[in-house]
Image 1: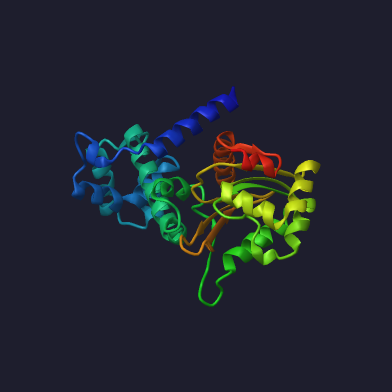
Image 2: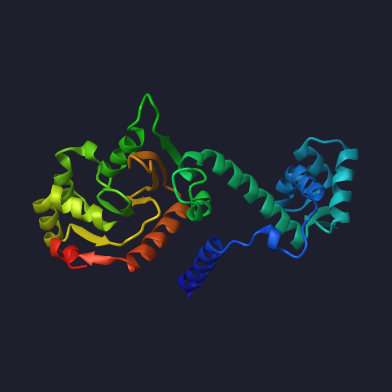
Length: 288
């Protein structure tokens, strides 16, 4: 039962992510000054979202005077955002929703700033969906001083893992691995989804290693015509990669060990895997 409910929640979330409702489409909108006023009171929402507070606790946690606390609580009451119960101020349902929205807004804005290099490297329709899962992720970007930093981070996580699942618009095993790439098929269990031309190149560059790994069950290879970015699921981390459109080089790699990021990555991978074709040998690709 629990898994079914979770699946429904995640499915709804994905549907909302892919069909966002713009504020411009709403019949009525909050005035800009009112929005600013709500954001201005974010610290007030933050202390009350944890639970009801009396006036002394409110003043102590916000480090404000009694006059200011009276102004705050009057504003909450006037907007039906909090009620006073047993001398303590408690958020209403509306107030709780406002508090959640403000907390998420700040989180998403902070994450968007941190993830800016990644958001510039992936298509517009997928930008919003990666912000929340990787809000606290490790961002590694290519710089003139260290152009291979994202690849180095990827390889580090790969060497620390016994498995790898994911998809990519280019070969997921970086060329920087050199001759070691072939041996990775023996050391790591992989399930990879590639574009058809990438699969073709993989068979051309490592024909025996790829086929032997598939036959031995170490490598499950699949293909589909379009992929949005690079996704990697390691034993302990999950990551998303963005690439330069002209050169195909990795510009940024963002990874996280959070449960939210892993849950998101698992679901995204399953969705693309279900819509891909298995490749058991080179002939499968040639006959598509």
